[in-house]
Figure 1 (spheres, rainbow, N blue to C red):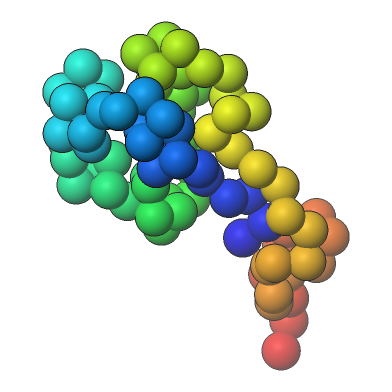
Figure 2: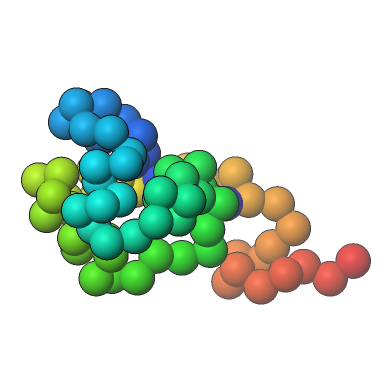
Length: 82
């Protein structure tokens, strides 16, 4: 996926553990782990907002676009036909 989450970098900068962030945001550690690893298809804006508030950062500090990292999709994001 061309969107890369850099939540682990921001946690390290803020010297905060995943467990603490999960508790303060109100999500499970398992869901936060999936988010950190990029194994989610989306994130709710209210969750992103709480993360940014707690980590005192902007969404752009947590998300990065890397073109060309997605395979099997057309430019609109639809699955390519085989």
